[in-house]
Image (cartoon, rainbow, N blue to C red; front, side):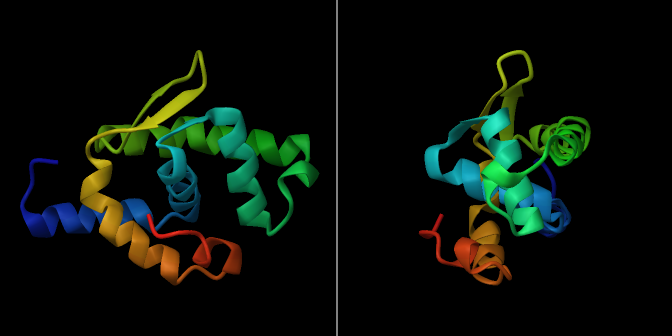
Length: 121
């Protein structure tokens, strides 16, 4: 992100405005690496306020499409993650540190207690 601080902050805010992107990053922040299948389950569960094992195939497919065609490329463009669709591996990249404080503020204000009660990022 080679922009002014204000420009970077604005970009980070618009990136984190999407709940699916935030959910994905909360999950990644724990281990710094994850598999797409696991992320799909967790993101869908938080989105629907359900347990991951109860998410049906149709919902998983919708979340998959949205992550692969929108959220993962956007986050990769900003050097926040790196991913490989063949293996399904997703890892945090150097740019994550730039948005970590802002993501942490979002985490503390999420509606879902399960997310708010997670350890700080």
